[in-house]
Image (cartoon, rainbow, N blue to C red):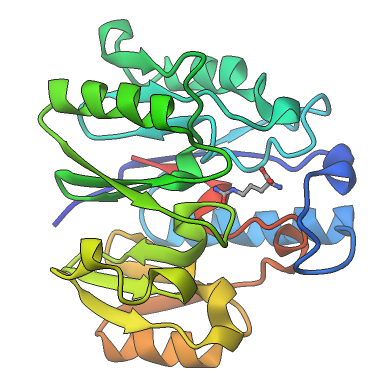
Length: 258
Ligand code: CIR
């Protein structure tokens, strides 16, 4: 079984109320409530026996609590991405400082212009890594990413998406060959080899669950997905993410787990 020993999170900043949103989940985040939810998220990770490094809030970057996007951390290397969203691109410099505490310099790779890539588009399934071609991750970014992965013995499969923000907005790997799939990812041939639980449309947000050392963290309020995950045999923890959802962020976006 894969073991995650570490996670990196960043505290939400007050400026998160100005974060990017598609408006799919209306409203602006309540900052105090977001902080309380973030506390609960950290606590949930710690219950999964993972050491959590908590980076300070960065008011220059409203979306910087979504640390998953500026880096991809694998067992063999770290890849600092090149976020397409202009207001987020500078986050890569600060996440790299944190990543350097855990990875030697010769194992830290970079995606560079004209390539763009965000970690939310990357789903790791053992040595098989899926990357979404999205509004945020372009063909050149994927080309660079695939070359880096090949160097470290991973295979890379591109998945096109048109409806959601990132690949992991709609599909997530729970280890043990199990996938949660929703919306446009249901029926995609790329995922044929996995056991797939099809998330009902009204619970689409909960396709973004995270597996952490045998436990699956599920967003609060999605009973069909929670029951399905339990029936797959996992321990579960639920965490309320309502304030992050208003910015299109889910459980995976809030940490780097490695
Ligand atoms: C953004 O649009 O970049 C943020 N408001 C949400 C990022 C969510 N991250 C993720 O799905 N990995």
